[in-house]
Figure 1 (cartoon, rainbow, N blue to C red):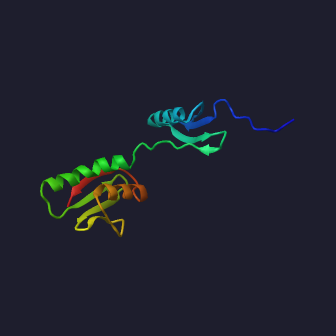
Figure 2 (cartoon, rainbow, N blue to C red):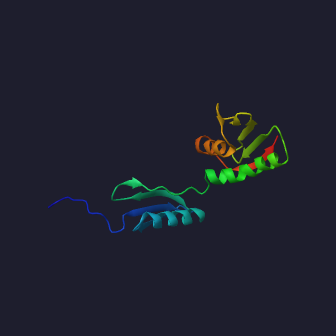
Figure 3 (cartoon, rainbow, N blue to C red):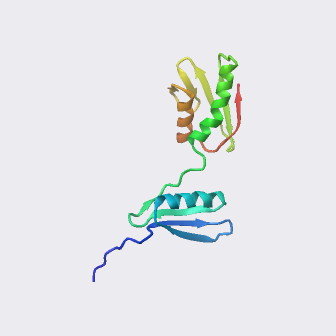
Length: 145
């Protein structure tokens, strides 16, 4: 008798837990179906416990609810507004819902962020780097100083 692993018919497993502590599981035939279901369940207040492909034993990445592009869409209009108004020295302050404030300085060499030692070519690059490497939270107030 061989002890061979047989790939399940639906190899993608999603485990979630609702606000009452009830754990649910669902099998999927494909990764896209699992991801769609996970995003829907997360919007309904469930927490993702595990999203894996059983046959290869790999974690399945669930798209974030809020990403670098969303962060940039919130920050960039304030900067663009300051440019349109003709400000020659722009300091952009971004307060987040985690009570952290980040600053972007419009410098001669590019955009400087208080969290980095180097300048960035443009605001988009600076905001994306900040979000991916340092930011925790979403903007609650963006102001020009």
